[in-house]
Figure 1: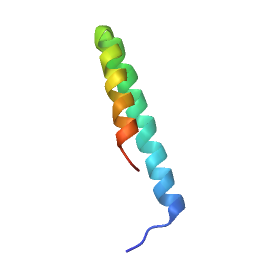
Figure 2 (figure 1 turned 30 degrees about the vertical axis):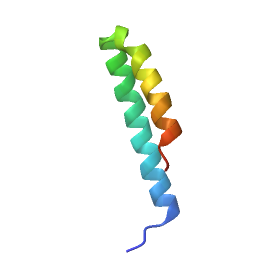
Figure 3 (figure 1 turned 30 degrees about the horizontal axis):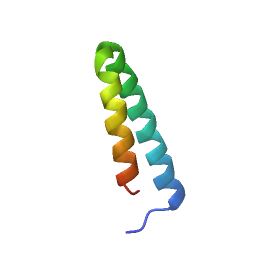
Figure 4 (figure 1 turned 90 degrees about the horizontal axis):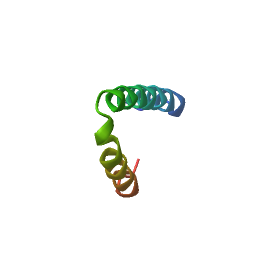
Amino acid sequence: MAESDAERRRRRAQFLRDLTEARELRDRVQPRRVKTARLRHAMRMRTFRW
């Protein structure tokens, strides 16, 4: 079953929005972890392929 590109992109955009929102919420709650989390995220973005 192949879903349309538009649908997949829309769902992924929604997912990324939720992810960003959750990260901001967590950052407000645990400010001192933000720096290491950001470094880890940068590393993951370099190695992860969509």
